[in-house]
Image 1 (tube, rainbow, N blue to C red):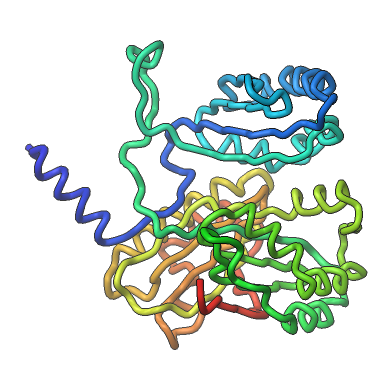
Image 2 (cartoon, rainbow, N blue to C red):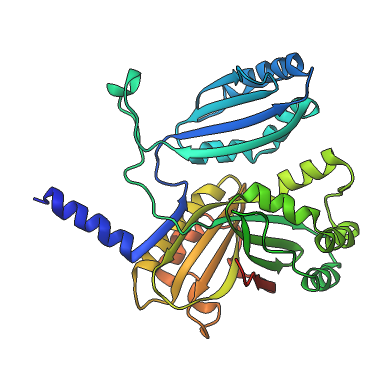
Length: 358
């Protein structure tokens, strides 16, 4: 029988051997918090739009409940909280075209929003005291870095030109404010698909807004506009919002080993069968958890990004080994084949930049 002290020791050993800074696959319930700043005088319009959206979201699989709250100090400040059975069904919904259409009526009355997502670790009192509720088993150990990516496609035949534009830009200032820094930006392409992965220490939203305001970044974005398959007008707030909403490629899992050399970064693109993207991402996450546990193995860390049927695996391997160690081994290929709509392929590295003072 395993004693309590032995269990604690095993947990500490796991924490020492690896750090998982993000994962949506532990099965525990999810609490989503949306902070909303409504234009003065638009409160009733916002309330009506929310009530209509609430009728629709109630039937979304995995949705449990939600609340709408208004500040007692500032009527323009609202808070929406929702509970979900787990993170995957929420992400499937929030990244869907259905969600883009559903929230459209609300944007004309909203000045700003901020979305926060939390796994439920512990709870006390009320219904929770006697209910069988899925809670996160233990807190994860992070490294203080937030990971996010954007993906979009360009017009066939323009790939070489787009790669040249994306490779030749001046890096923006790494310092965003006293607490936020840009750490790293990695750009990859496969065919006409572009993936831009960023790492931020501090506030992701503040960093994204900081980058968007930089003249050198704005010039690059304007330069690639004619080649995008999805048109956008960066001078039109709604056009830009819809583009970047659809381009968002969230990180669903990250694992890295401690006290190991800096790796060589590669990206692999996994085209999922229709409707199987999240399942594929979870399988890759489990495989990378096992790979990082091997202290002599080639994989030092990985981040899995997923949206709909697009799955991208950003992996760091020991220097000099190339992309081969990151590709699935024969023993792991069969489960992947059942979820893949094609082959996993390495993406071409366009640029990989670290911020020296991050």
